[in-house]
Image (cartoon, rainbow, N blue to C red; front, side, top):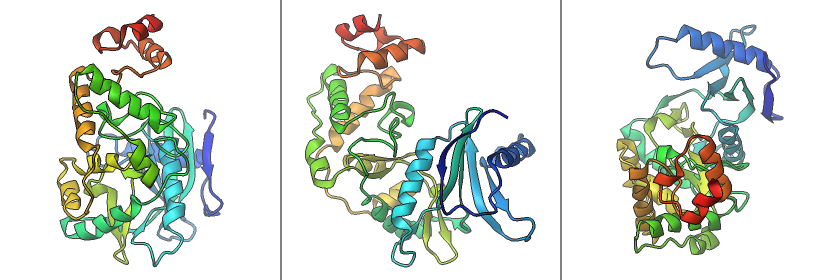
Length: 310
């Protein structure tokens, strides 16, 4: 067994929780048993077999699972679960998160429920409205603890670098627009000054929400959730997913002054198939991209940065 790197070890984790090694073994057994399945999800429930009871924890695991996702879910759960009766949404507590062999594992509270249907759109919309009022703990855009931004604005729904500030994110977006000769300019400062960075759910398909036995909505997946300027949530609401469209019609929002420019910049990335265009990407990020066989000469990167990447 390779060295296990722990990220979250919560004080409220159950005493009966197996060791990380045992959890990994259960996940491996589950994956092998479902190797030919096209429908199963990479998750396994934990049951206290000595008591023959119901599941008490759920393990989400995959190579794509990040500790940034775990930290973001952990933070949001602490915010919304304080008063179980008052909040319109629940978030499973994170008990444990760790990495091993390039795989990520998030061990969380098990909440029994059913996947939401179209009939639940009103309840889910109210839950989402509540979640997007949550303000980030720092001024750095992205997941809790830092990391790439996961959002549909970017190619493959993930930024190619970590932004240390909203200013750098804004400069990159305006660099894209300038490179493409667009008249649009993004100005994120005023809305950040007014609202701060708010939780942005970038994937609101119905499978990410269940309704528990008390008919309360439970938000399950934070892999595509980050703290961003509020215009990015308006962007996410325009996703073509059918359930997201139902939510969009039920979530009143003031008209965003930045949305059109964000769409133009995002669409400008599509022909290149990369996020790495614009005048404000650092030489370091270009160097790292070059190390991954990224061809800087096909992206419109300014000549001075191309020279720096040589």
